[in-house]
Length: 341
Ligand code: GLY
Figure 1 (tube, rainbow, N blue to C red):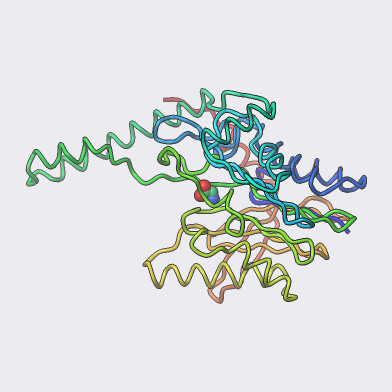
Figure 2 (figure 1 turned 180 degrees about the horizontal axis):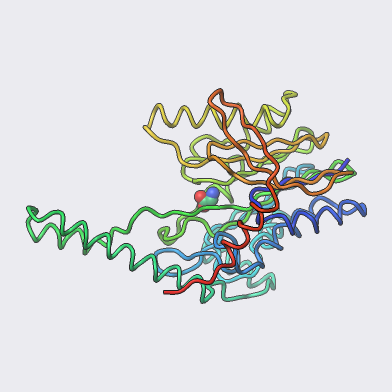
């Protein structure tokens, strides 16, 4: 049995390519890396790789991870700059017994020395989104100041000077879990993280146990969502642990996502977006989200690739609906639409 599952419709082409490899007896480590690279290379996805949106200094900082479920080896990078395929750098880091998670300059230095392809990852399109966002923030600030006429002028100036931008948003990670015919399971993630994040901010995607985890004796899980909230729960590890106890991946994802989302709401008054995909060692799969309409892609031996939409239910379960061709066309059209200042 082989199979692969990944977050978001953006993974479809990558999944199809990976599935071909698996069909021909390819390995899960090569297949999962190829699936993620395909997404990283596509310039119109704003949250992964080339074309990913920058931080508040207009610098693209990339997070990625790779894990081998046989050896439990993992490699990860945080805030990597200007390398074409962060997932491949992460995979290379998994080969060592130490220095497996590198960030910022250290990650850049490793990638450079290892001969990875350098590439300016900030596209003209991403620059337009950045400038539009600055203009929106400025407009909001001016409107806010106009509403606060009673406030002393000095305080208004201070608030402006602090450059407090509106909350960072947009955090769609591509995360995939893969099983090959030999029973090797792998997972990998890649993202440019939150748009307008602070320099050096690292999300859940390169953090083992939080944004990804895989154990070939149980299964694997990978997330997308607000990293700061996913990291509060070590959720990927928990889903894999439950699969290891025999839970179906769907039940494991639903239980973990809904219970943790409820906990955050109870304790903090709110929960960020949290979505997970998972596959177990038998090739059974699951996906759950607290976000209405989260999309994911799955292909298993003997089936075509399918794109689904997840619909969280009040009882904590998560229904799946096959995405129509119309929905998929609209998804791509939205990403390819021209942008102007
Ligand atoms: N889940 C991706 C991030 O928060 O950066």
